[in-house]
Image (cartoon, rainbow, N blue to C red; front, top):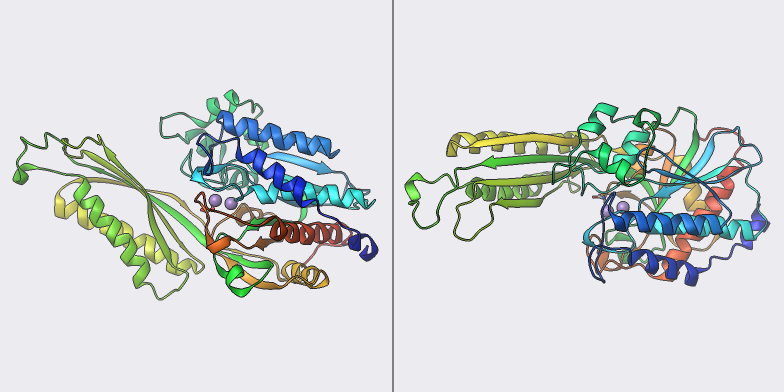
Length: 423
Ligand code: HGY
Ligand code: MN
Ligand code: MN
C-alpha cells in the first residue's frame, strides 16, 4: 500500500479546469456562483459531474431525491463501503469551491488511485448529496438528512419553496423519479465516511496549516419568524394608528446579535440571514416581514438556550406591539462528534505527506453532520483565503486543493483495506 501511495499524482490543473467549468453552471454572473436545487443550473452541473465520473470509469446511480452515488467496486463488494463526497449546490452569489472541492476532488482522488494500479478491497463510493444548502426548501442537508432517515416522507412532501412549490413535483420535473421511502440508507451500508471541504474560516491560513482534521461539527438550528402588521399608505396613515411589521423585526434582528454576543461560549453564533419585507415599496408601510435566523454552537445546551431566548423575545414583541408573529423551528440538529481513530488517520496520512495538519472543529455544518448518524466520520479541511466563504471572493489555491485531494486519496485507500469496523 505505502509503495502505491508514494506514486499518487494529483492532476491539479485538470481539477482546476473542472472546478471552473462547474462554476460556470450558475444562475448569476461570475465571479459569484448561484446553483439552486432542481434548477437548470443544478441539472447541468450534475450532468458535468456525471460526465467526469463516467470518463473515470466509475458507476453512477441516483436516488429519488437526486443523491448521486459514484461507485468504484471493490474486490469484496459485500463488505460495508468506504464513502466520501459533498455537494454542488451553491447559495446565491457565493463561491465556486464550497462543496465542489469535495465532489470533484473525490473524483480526482479515485482517478489518481486508479492510475497507480490500486484496486480497492472495500468498495469506495462518492456521494453527491442533494441540497446541502437550505436555499430552496429552507432546510440544509436535505439529501443527507433523508439518507440518515431523519426526515419522513411526509415531512419531505410537505416542504415548500419560496414560491409555494412542493418538493415532489419539483424533484420529478428535475428528472428524479422513484419512491422517497427508498431513500434512507441501511445500517451497515458504510464502514466510514470522510468528506473533503474548504474550511470556510480563517484558522488554517492563520496557523500556516495545509490540512484540518475535523473532530466535531457545530449544532445548527434555524428559526423562521413571520411578523404580520397592517400595512397601509406611508403618507396618509399617521403614526399612532400604524402596525408597522418592520419595527419589531428590526428589534428582533438586533436581539439575535445580542444573544450570541452575550453567550459565554466562543462558538455561539447567530445570524438573521434572511429578512424579507412585504410589499417592499418605499411608500407602503411594511405589512409582513419574514426573518430566518441561523443559530449555532458546538455546545448543544448553549445553542438551545439561544433558540429559547429568541422565541421568548418573539413573545415579548408580540405583546408589546400587539402584533401577530408566527414562529417556526425549521431545524434543530445535534452536533456531530467525528471518530478519533479517523481523525488520527487523517493526521497520520498528512504527516506521511509532510503536510502541516491540525485537529479542529467545524463551525459550518456539512453532510458529514448526518452521515455521522450512519457511520464513523471525519472531514479533511483545506484553507480558505482570508477565511472567506459564501461570497464570490471564496478562494483555495490549486496547490492547497491538491494536498487535500492527496490526503483524501491515501485515506480512502487505507480505509478500503481496513479489515474490520473502525472504532
Ligand atoms: O451553512 C453552512 O454551514 C453550510 O455551508 N451550508
Ligand atoms: Mn455552504
Ligand atoms: Mn458546504
